[in-house]
Length: 359
View 1 (spheres, rainbow, N blue to C red):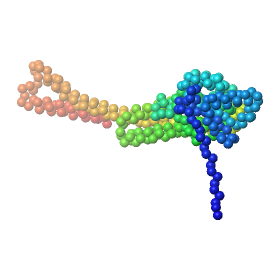
View 2: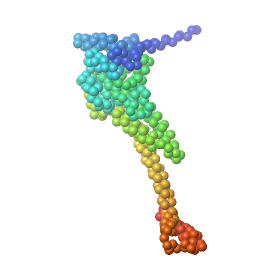
View 3: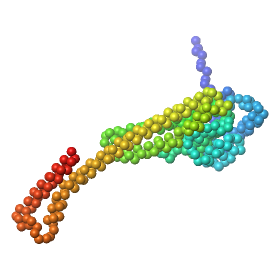
View 4: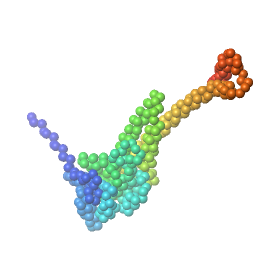
C-alpha cells in the first residue's frame, strides 16, 4: 500500500536585493507585504515603490483604501545619499516630525505619535561593532498603516538582521508588527552584547582572584563606558512611550499595541541587565583600586623602613665625614668597630620603634 506523500512546502519567494549602499535614490531595500495574498512578499525598487504609493494615495483620496487590503510597504534608505530625503519628500508624504527628527541632532531612543503616524528614533549598533562606545549610530523610523520607512547613515546590525529575516520569508502581520520585530531584534542584539561583556568580565574577575593585575583597570573602564553610553542612548523615553501606549493611532489594532508594549518591556529588561552588569564592573573597579592602594601602601612602608634604618648611618656618616679637628676616635685603634656598634644599636632601636608602631 502506497503511503500518501506530504504536500511540498511553498518555496520562499526569491527577493531581489539592491546594492549594499542603495540605488540611485539611496533605497537599500523595499518590500511589499501582503499577508492575505499568495505571494506574501515582493521586492520593489524605487520606481515601483513610487508607483505603489501613488496608487495608495489615489485610493485613499477616493475613499477606496479598503481595496488595498492588509498590504503595506517597507522602504529602507541610506541617508548618505542626498537623493534619499528628496525622494521621501516627493513620494512618501511622511509627517513633518520625521524630517525634523532627521535634523534635530537628538539621538536618544524614543517612539512617539505624530498625527496618525508613529515616529521613532532608535540608537542601533553599527554593523562592524566591536565593543567600542563609538560604534553606535541612529536609525530613524516612520510607521503608518500602509508604509514603514527606515533610514540610516551607516550600516546597522538590527535592521540588517530584520532584512535577513524578511529575505528568508518572514512576514510581519502589520506595519506595527514590523516595528515590534525590529525592537525585539535590537533586544536580541543587546543580549549578545551583554553575554560578550559578561564573558570578558568573568575572565577579568578570574585574573583578579589569581592576583594578576595587569591592565584590568583600563579594560574595565572601557567596558563600563560602553555600557553607560548604550544605556543613555538606547533607553526609551518613558513619557513619549507612555503617551503612545495610552493613546495609539486609530488604525493600530489592540494586538499590535500589546505586542509593542511587550517588545518595549523586553527591551527594558535587557537594559536592566546592562545596568546590573555596570554595577558589577563598578564593584570590580573598586576591588582593583583597593588592591592597587594596598600595593602602594606596602611599597611606601618598605621605603619608609629603608629610610628609617638608614637614618643613623647617614647622620653619623655626615658628622664624622667633616674634615675638622676634634673628631672623636680618630686615633683609636678600634674606632671603626666602635662606631659600627653605635650605628647598629641606633638602627635596631629605630627598627623596633617603627615596627612597634606598625603593629
